[in-house]
Image 1: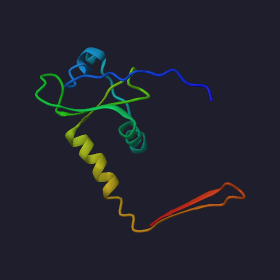
Image 2 (image 1 turned 90 degrees about the vertical axis):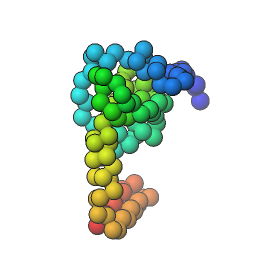
Image 3 (image 1 turned 60 degrees about the vertical axis):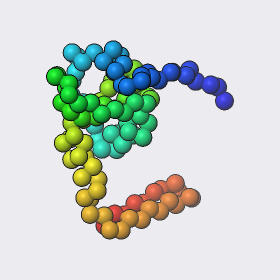
Length: 111
């Protein structure tokens, strides 16, 4: 197996390096699916709480190991809470998954 190039994470003692590593003047909106946000969280290289900043609303910064050099996601507390509520309030009472090893077909059922 060939080894991939290893990228060092941006490491800061208290998160202050985020303000040096990212250009907050070039902020834009990116629409992500909840599954994409979950992957960003699972693979986060950085996750920090931001508050008491004049130009940035209180919330969470998330930089995944895959995209940390390209972007830093920001979610307000209200946005993050709404996403969590969507996942927790999906009213699924039964979930089944079946994989047919002969055909490779996967069937999923959610009720």
